[in-house]
Length: 248
Image 1 (cartoon, rainbow, N blue to C red):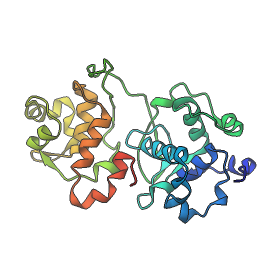
Image 2 (image 1 turned 90 degrees about the vertical axis):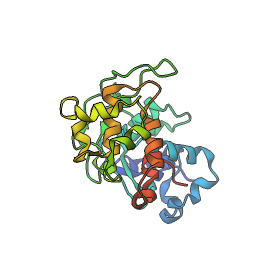
Image 3 (image 1 turned 45 degrees about the vertical axis):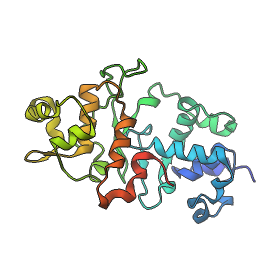
């Protein structure tokens, strides 16, 4: 396995996920056929690389750690991130061990790197301010994850879902029967951003609103994602990995 040509890779604006993981292991991506890598041929016998790939993909959506990225819906391994942001995330956020010095040198000091919100889309995403953490403590004593999305945030993921009634929202995200009251006051409390028609709501946007504004006890965003992934409509089930970060 050859060492990467760092003089080349440091000038590549965006890397496919599998390429970034190869570089994190000080391995030259060009040594591997892209089609084989996309099928996890390279990662099958490399547990560390496989785990890193899954973790990197899971952090792209829905609340990514990168201000700019590109999602490949047909082959998630070929989604792209900036090398500078990937190196910063690998060094400062997940703190992977054994990273090559060339990658360490590319990492930038970003105090808010872990909380940088990004708009999931097929084009460059705009940077978002840090989310306000105002949720109630969860079972571990930590505060529930919170988001402050605009109406256009996470549009690609909201489109995976069909509109549902309030009773379905209560079944997905139990809240002691409060969803009916939330819906009645949607224009005042902000839930209207999730409304798609008379009495129906987009469940993805409703979940984002619920986590960010209500801070439900015992719930975090990753738990919401698991529930949403299990309740995708038939037309979107092939896209489950976009919510879970799992490509099996």
